[in-house]
Length: 107
Length: 120
Image (cartoon, rainbow over all chains, first blue to last red; front, side, top):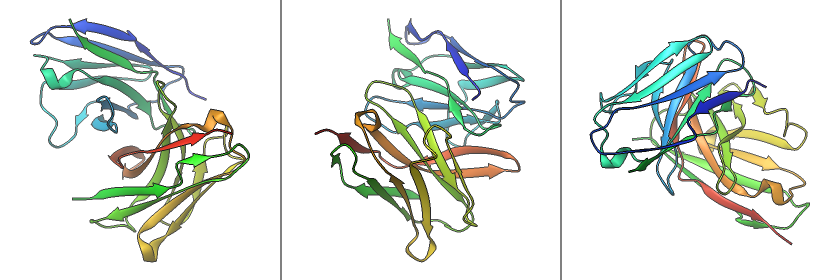
């Protein structure tokens, strides 16, 4: 299985901050990399597909980049509703695999 | 607006079979693939498998010997069966829509999640 490793596992930030989350794949997944946001008690929500394509309705303060094995999710001007857990996921290989998650908490 | 509505038994005993069905409300059904993902309490997401609109399935090798995903196009629903459950199968089970852009795919619509507990 392809291992997806996110860092950090958690971070504390303030409203208005810029945060970055990294995701590393154990093998190249080209750009077949998606990002999801999960708020407590809710189902995950697709934010970004194909490493950098923002889904319709997702605020432009979210952005994704990377290819191959190294990827980044950036959130600028952090808003109260952005405090959640974020997961990366590769769709290049079967089985599809997720990172372990990064929890963004309020400082 | 497409919505996914899962239903099924929430409490099972060890060795029983987990059966969960997801009804697709709104939007086209046959154009898409459909899948299941689970999340144990306090843990991350695990992909269980997917079914293409033509019926082809892909499963997580870790579960493949116990899992069947099926499709009922006439009822606009798809189902997950997982046999011989243990406490390790306790999780929130999510049904998802799989959207493909060429070879790329993503889980763009998620059901609300159904809690399944395995306990004697």
